Image (cartoon, rainbow, N blue to C red; front, top):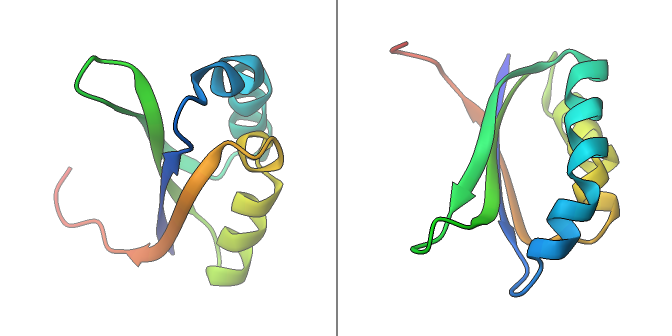
Length: 90
C-alpha cells in the first residue's frame, strides 16, 4: 500500500536539513520502501519540505518509517502529513 508523506520545514531550518541530508538519503536507501521522493522548494528554489511516497503494508508501518527518519529525529519539520495514496498515472 502506498502512503504520501508530506512535510514542511520549520522556518530558517535549511542548515538542519543540510546537516542531516546524508543520513536521510542513507535511511531511504537502507529501508528500501521509498518509491519516489524529493524536496519541496520555496519561491527562491531552496529546499523547504519533502514529498515521499512509501510502499509499506499499512499506516502503522508508514508512521514508524516517518517517526524514525533522520529529518524527523533532528526536529526539522514544522508540520507532517501522512495519507494513504493511490497511484493512478505514472
